[in-house]
Amino acid sequence: MTDDAPMTGDLPGTDQPDLRQLDELLDEIYHGQERLSQADIYRSAVSADLPAELLTRVAALPEGEYAVDEVADLLGGSAG
Image 1 (cartoon, rainbow, N blue to C red):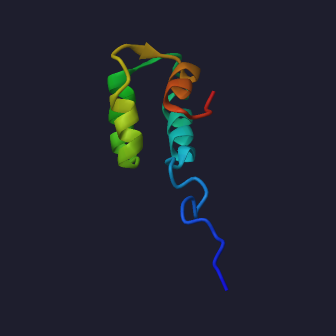
Image 2: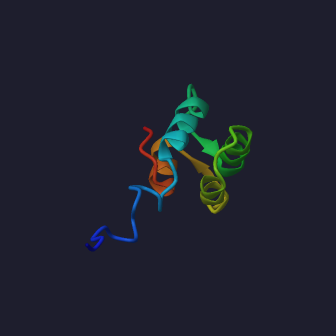
């Protein structure tokens, strides 16, 4: 008998962080806000205890202000 199961990719999505947390954060912090700065988004992400990979993505955003759809596109989320 041989085991034909692939050795890589055992769990779907293990290469990507759970973006639902990011989407929920963006929905929350953009409530009533049109644009937020990268620094405000990062502070909120730290306060929300997002996983390190997501924090790294937020920290890598260029300084400036973003609308929710812009930042979701840049970070890989779907909020909007």
